Image 1 (spheres, rainbow, N blue to C red):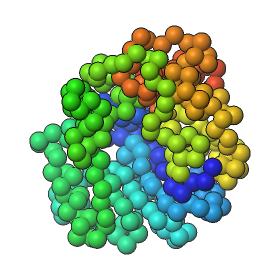
Image 2: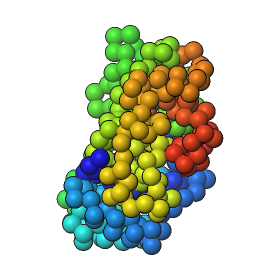
Image 3: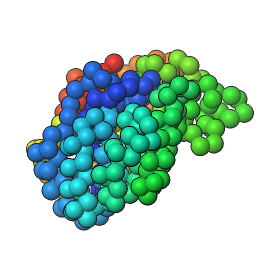
Length: 297
Ligand code: SF4
């Protein structure tokens, strides 16, 4: 497996508790990557020849501002392209946003901001506007993530297709519990492919504060504090992985069948079936289907 992007979950903690969050981000969540761990992780990342990008995300990475800044400085000094994903809670005014972002100018090459009705309503969506304006003044490229509401992808004419500029909900994590009831549903046996991740060679993976390397959130392929990142990547064969193998053969439906599980008759999408099946398999695969933060339901 060759990674070109490594997404560091600096923390599972977040200022918000969005219904669509796959990592169950919340002010009550625990798990933070401290500076010592970050140093070890970046040293290991350096050993991956094809790795180009390091993203800092969460949870909300600006909650641990000094560690985020130090991490960005270390990663850029190593020659990586660096990006941050944030909900912009800190951009209370343009002037404040400039103060928060200025130390990152000329270091980060991407600031991706969440801007949708899960994060903001009419009263506070100016946070993202301030953050984008400040980033513009500092010449930091920005991107926006907008996730559609379930009903927006339910219309028969546009089934599964979110409005332009928005992405559809993936019903895993908290979305599986809080949003799937608002989506159109299909029989579980029809979910025979994973549409969102290339489980053989994903190009990017997420690494959490406990060292778990996730091929998809909640499916670990190793822990960098027990085996170096390079070895985890070299040793990974999707077909031999007890969760990814069945997913590759026939999607979440094959995963449920492989372990003789009886899922609920209908699901909102493949991710809901996958997530609920994995929840049922956690005791069987405690070192793969983790940490608790990803399954906080
Ligand atoms: S089907 Fe499973 S592995 Fe694929 S993207 Fe959805 S949750 Fe992840």
